[in-house]
Image (cartoon, rainbow, N blue to C red; front, side, top):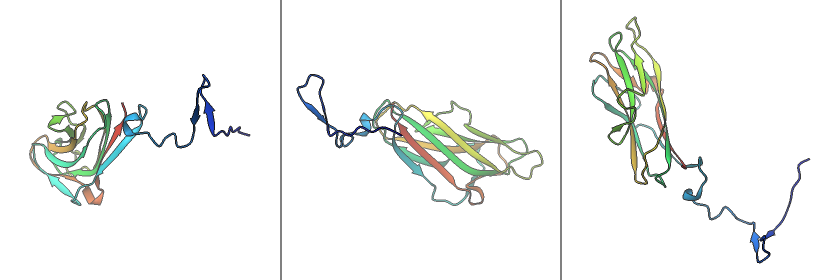
Length: 173
């Protein structure tokens, strides 16, 4: 059987006062949360039901903005979309995460799919999970972009109603 201690007040160590225990969390703010706490969550879903690109330059897929409460905060980014590529055999399609105009993958795609060998299409789930350190307390916009390695064919996202999702979680640093 678990033990319980029930008290209304604690006396300070030097005996000069008491500490009331009621509503101790009422004054807690996002900035005072312990390291690793989730401070806020932002989720974006696109206004389109399905879309595609055949561009060899980056095209916006989905974006969301978040304003961290502290410069030490980290942002956990979750992205997922159902996709299909009808590009030529061997052509890569990449989904890449940008923070503002900065490619967070350093130039390579965060999620890359290669066309299957028989040329009939390659359905896949594109997923990006990344912990980012924006080092700012100003608004930050994260955008997932898509491009093809070479021209020819199409890359579809939110394929067959599978949806596209982008979630940003601020983690106390």
